[in-house]
Length: 353
Image (cartoon, rainbow, N blue to C red; front, side):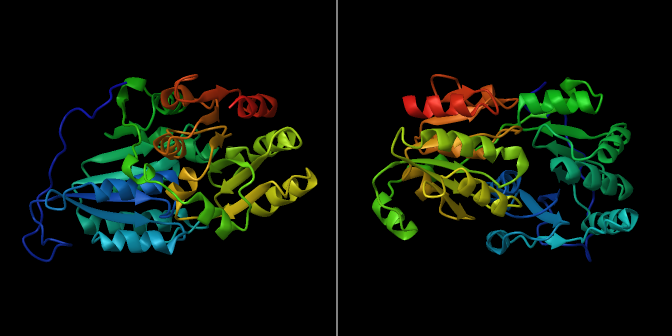
């Protein structure tokens, strides 16, 4: 597996007039196709990519097809001169959706179509091929493909000339196996974060006052969507083991489909007074800098931003051994890696730290 793209992209000739955004005729035009814009890891990496690009050299456009989850992120794009456009996904008539998506890609006349995440790498790539795009990137951000029928479509599309990208060696290896591709076809580009945002001091007392919590315990924090793959039940079981053994609170930052279920589980475990669900937050650096330890229980990841951010904030880390965890955490040096689903191991590591 290579760690940087090889070869060169073909540049398309643009119309002299009547084109889309032809005020920067010499800039490479990259059209990103992503399921949604919001606060997820891939979505934030896309925004970071745009922030750090020279607008005189690269012009970005964004297409998404699910509902926008976060209007603040839309404002962030617009502040950079990018106006994401939505192509509504018609699940009952997928061919109509593909046709509409291909039409938008064709009208944009991009030099590169960059398709993000599992479903984006299918729908976006399919539409880009139909639109006649010359340079297509299929970028995978995790080790799980969505559904069986999408995996089969993925396999059928692998015959077309595409540049494959993964954000970890593990992701590249596992996705290559699932698509029956040589792992060497994947370029691995690890995620990155702006570490300077997480090194600033934070007023812990002010944060706890805002949350209505006394400053009488150590704070264990996690940041992740409330979805099954993040395996929050293991975290809650580890929290239950902590009761009566150490003065600690757990801060869960994120929102998602399991919100009500996890709150109910915390109550059933008798730990709802020590586990606090903070929901969607936009002050992650502040929360991390006010905490004492970061705990991550995910079952499957690519190269998680959450761990990079916790390291940038200087927090001790306990994480499960999802495929690729060793690429992020050097066990015993930059954090501690424990078996997935092992709440006792998580508890013991928290106790030692």
